[in-house]
Image (tube, rainbow, N blue to C red; front, side):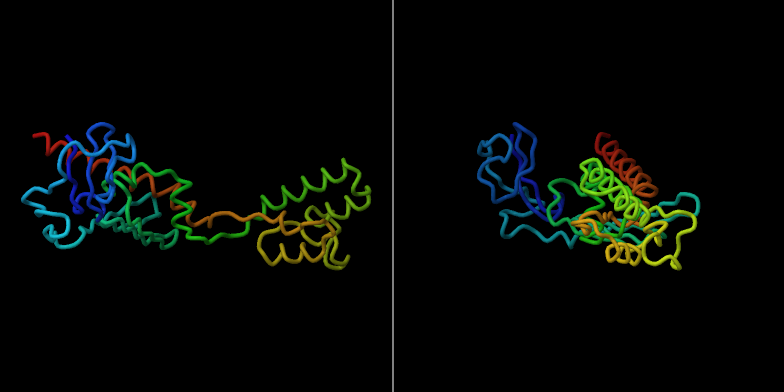
Length: 240
């Protein structure tokens, strides 16, 4: 039987669970987003949660949970709320995001998300220059242009020396041959000014900030392990 689900249990958004495909649907949906069928039972809250959607009882606000994770000298303090808010202070940086409608119990939602999706949410549009990827892309473009005979041997060598100089190269030889690496955006800008390659800006690569990548790689799995253990304990208690 399809069942009404109150906001206290679904990230602040009341709705109903479809008994056919087991999907959660917002209260505004007349049919299930999975099977396209209308609910098979009236969507009436029980006495504990209220009588109708517009007048359901106040549960006193979202519950806040706190966690501490450590890995050697690395650490993070994490706070989450049942309505989808995530905040962390860590030695890899401070991050946060609010998922206003996660679609299921928030802890379960956090356990199931993949690293790429999480990194994009925590970065919120921030990025940093990726020197290693940029150098690889530039060298690949030089080789392609040389094979296509769009660059002479001397032109290709000059462009190659900008990102892979000879041992004797340096500022005393002028701009060309001055960049042993692209470790930051200042060096990338200097290369951009010096190069004769077309569409040079497209060869410069960026990535999710390394602090976020390290937080997800080193500490996030420990946090998820705590969430899974906590959820498993709650299921065991309910089964008793």
